[in-house]
Image 1 (cartoon, rainbow, N blue to C red):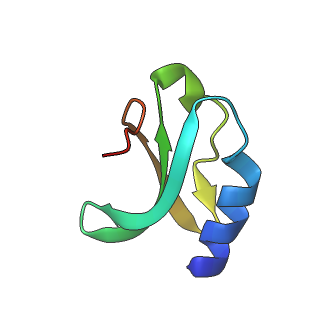
Image 2 (cartoon, one colour):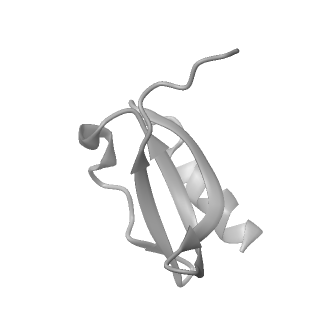
Amino acid sequence: MKGALGKLTKAVIDRPGVTGTAIGLSKGKPCLKVYVKDRRAASKIPARVDGYHVEVEVTGTFQRR
């Protein structure tokens, strides 16, 4: 799964509005997550990478604390 995450990260991290990627759960099953600032940034994110479901989550901008 880490290999799939690396592949996804390389493909999307430099796109405008993408703030991060991670391994997570969706409906109790492992998935890859892409965090975006808004719904517009979610376009053209692949639905699957190496057989893993990709879930897009709108988070807004991350703030340092």
